[in-house]
Image: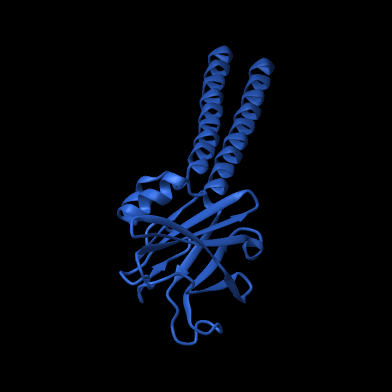
Length: 214
């Protein structure tokens, strides 16, 4: 009788330990998936910026202090079949909020590429421009979304192929097809897999203990 009681007690300890381990593994995976860093953009509205003649508003979002992110912008274009790439200055409007003024010509086909890096994370936004290189008045990409209006986001730095393909074709098609959350699913899968393994291990151990007790 005492052996059976001790066996059941040990079984209870195993189940509790495994359950806690599985819970923390799954919780860690959920936190990894929920966190991150991203840029958001929008066309300026009346009173939305203190910078005169702003063409685009850029905001940083994420865990920690995303306002400390390093944000860069380039204007990528093609003029008379010649590739052009121009650095674009950002104007600080508020903490984590920036304004972009037009610094590229009307001729040719242009788009903006915004890249932010913070705490080992990266975010990229492609902004489609009109036939005269202007920002569409309803341009918008909300935080932690891959698809917006005249804008698409990636959860990584852009490659040369990303930029070239986006400039020469449809920005939305390129951005949606790209692995915008390349590092996050693998971490989530690993954590979930560990939790599932521990849970199955605990169930198997419980079955063995019950058979031994009987």
